[in-house]
Amino acid sequence: MSECPLCGLSLETESVTTGDGNIFSCVNCGPYRASNSFLAVVQSLDGRGRAAISHRLILRRSGEGIPRVTSYDVDDAEKNPALPGIPEAINRLLLWVFQNSSALGDLVDLRNQEVIAFVGVESGQAVPLLLRTLKTDGLVDVWPYKGGAKVQLTPEGWQKAEESEAMGSVRFRQTDWNRVNRTVDELRSRLATAETEEQCQGIGLLCREILISAGQAVSAIDPQKPESQVPSPTDAKAHLEAFLSGRIQVSTQSVTRKYARAAWGLAVELQHHRTATPQQAALCAEATAAAINVVSILANDPRHAV
Ligand SMILES: [Zn+2]
Image 1 (tube, rainbow, N blue to C red):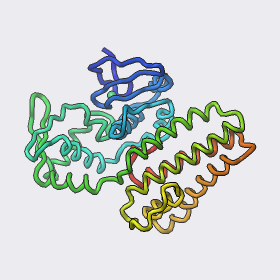
Image 2 (image 1 turned 135 degrees about the vertical axis):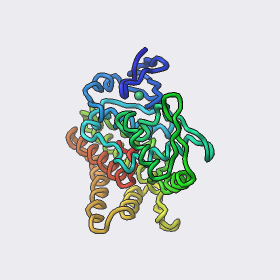
Image 3 (image 1 turned 30 degrees about the vertical axis):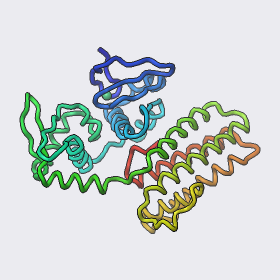
Image 4 (image 1 turned 45 degrees about the vertical axis):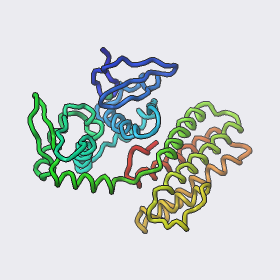
């Protein structure tokens, strides 16, 4: 029986081979598509990097379809193997128990491996440690069960989970954000082969589309904006600026806003540049991806990183 290339768990069903890579169905990471380029390099990642990808995958799973991983995810995880900090991991564990309880009093089986990727820890060994903190805080009770444990929320734990789910991280309109992710994938594959001026201009157009989709996704979730001030759907710059100014300290606001504006400016310039070069296209693509990541950092929601 084969193993999940990310978390090493034995797979209950064999992977399916497709034109470009394989579809895996792992109880920890969820179903995902891995490109051949991903499978060729994933073994070079350390445990933390793989756990970071597995965590991001499970966050992306709430969107449409089966999420896809490529060698870009490996590069990205090498540069930034971000996993939640301890307080956030504890909170996510509480949320996981909550989301797997249908009513107060339910006993949830923790042997279900899915919890590792959801909480965002490197291995299952961390889970009992986090659980102990929740128990000490009176948020859960733990009952031994067939060599493992079952967990039950206390009324206080239930209430805290409900509150933290409601506050949650900022929720993007997922359909818009899926479009951002799809277009970024396309951007990267087209960038790899862009040579002519027209192809490079096309990169600028794609960057502009990505920023527009991002602007639409954030405009849908910003509660600080009264309805009358909501900018028009194609005014991505205004959406992004409104989102940024609502979420960052005044002292750093102007720089971040200038950054969003500059990313937009680069895309528009490249799109209209009669002598666009592959180098300009690459710069524009990186600036756009970074602007998207700025938004996802401010929303405190790593599932939206690209
Ligand atoms: Zn897995």
